[in-house]
Length: 201
Image (cartoon, rainbow, N blue to C red; front, side):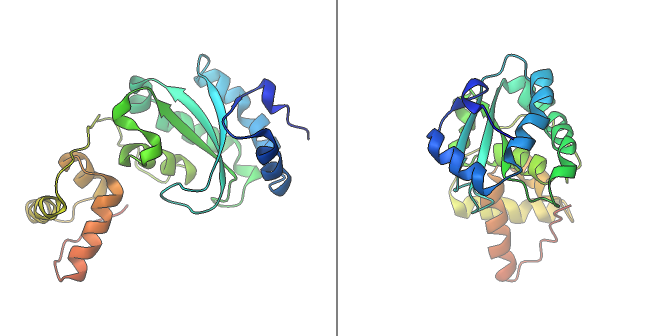
C-alpha cells in the first residue's frame, strides 16, 4: 500500500526519513489509513502531523508520532476515550503493544509541553499506547509543581502514611508531581527501607 502522506499530514520529519521508517515497518501505512476515519470523526479541525521520534520517556524504540492538536478541554475530558477507541480499530494489525505509530496529543497550552515529557501527557499517550490499560479516571486538570526533590520525598512519605496503599495516579494528581519523577522517588525510598505500598494498577 502506497502512502501519500504529504497530502494527508504536515511532515515534521524529512520525507525520506519517514519513507525509510515505513519501509522497515510494513504495517505503518495500513495503520494510518485504518485510523484516518476515526481521526476525522473525533478531531475534524485538528492539524495532523507526522514526526519520527526515538526519545520518548517510556520507549527507546523509534516511533512515528501521529501528532493530533487538541484543546485543553478535549485533552482533559475526551481524549483518553478517543485514543483508546482508535487503537481498538488497529488491534488486528498489531501484536500486543507492538505498534510503530503513537497517537500523540499536542496542546497549545505551554504548561503541557510534550517535548519535555510532561507527566500528564505521558500518562495519556502511554495509556493509549498500551491499549487502554488504565481505569480512565482522568478528569482532573493539574499543573505540575516544581519543588525540590527532598520536598517531593517528604510529601510522598506523608501522603502514603495518611493514605494506605495509594495508587500512583492519586499521588501524582494530589501532589501535582511528574509521574516519572514520582515513580523514581518511590523506588528510591523503598530501596532505603520505607514501606509505601504504592499500587500501579
